[in-house]
Image (cartoon, rainbow, N blue to C red):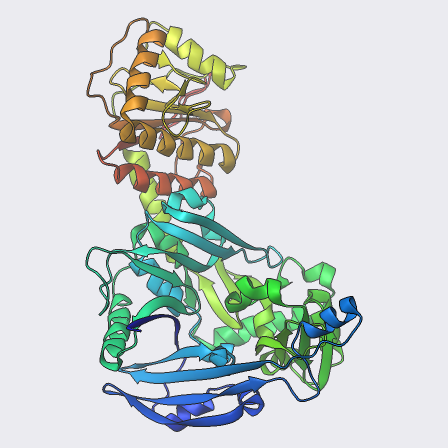
Length: 558
């Protein structure tokens, strides 16, 4: 076997010896190993530690499934389970890494891992047009975690990332064309799945394995892919005084009632356990000297258990406590364990609009620079101006009225294509809407009256679908030309027509100008994502965003 699919972890701190590598392991799990053997190793030119052994059911215990089978069949079913475990820790240059084999993952506790490693790699290596999966969590949303999966891969904008600046992305997977590992084929993309760890196929030869790890470390020195920049918006808080201030805030929350603090404090599933949580049937929570077993982890349960803990501050009890997950009700078959603090998530807002989140036990600042860069990019898009004029929106007009009346107005050379579907090989039932209005220079004009982000996010997405359809299908272009001829009273498009410009005509409340201050925050993110997709098309698309004036209202200065 020349390569093997593994999960590579980078350690949070850099041990410098085999003894220090041993110290970071989960010693409770080590005590459970039979035939335990460990010692220093050298892999290529790198020193490390190898640990091996077996997790076996005790003499009086059966495999996890035996109890249920025995009850159903009416007679005893007894089998023992044996699971081998190996763990390789390796110091490569200025970092330490770990690769687990079999059940070896149980030996590496969550607090020993660099929880941003796999994700940091993914946002630098992934092809933004071929993303398979996103897992994300929204601070302050009571631990809501979403996994969006597109098995065949898709562009990042198709994952509905319009409001992504409000999410913390915990995992991203897809294909990479920019990483060349020792056993990679130059013409074949590499599968990458980055979260807490990095799931990737690495060489088994010692020299090639170390080469692959160094290649991965080199990718982390690259700039982030602009299309995936929204993923990496959080910065670890290293100011100890600030951490103490934030911890004090959470300490006060821990003594309050759940109904008062549910918008600030939540029970969550740690990111590295999120996709395996469906296999968990029971938990053991250890806080101080208190041990409780429960079928689920809830904020109420954690706060109630914390009340009887004498340890002060109570937050320290969570940092020292542990939660053990089991795949059976009797708690005899562990899935993994982590610090109890990793099951709490807190949010805080400090003066000058500084936002913080406690994730997996560590404090992060939500990247204010990201919001600044967002505003700058939106400002650039809104500055684009042409000679195109849009008709004022009359009071009482619906969007349909506006589009139809614009096409009838002799002062404007528009063709109304609102609600007219263009069918192609993919959109063969209703077709896709190429635009609401076709402009005098064949601009695709998309019109929307909006009082919130949602309709604008749909508008921007609709434009992306239209450009992709017209660009990628000769059948769609032919039918679009026919539609323009029918609706435009004989207007002819060039035989080689492809879209080159998209205009977003937006009516905000009271006809106010569209600016970074008036455009809804979520809509700004959606606009930028759409712009990136449109400007990366086969024929780059010019984009213009225009505020539609309201008839009878003085035109705002924009």
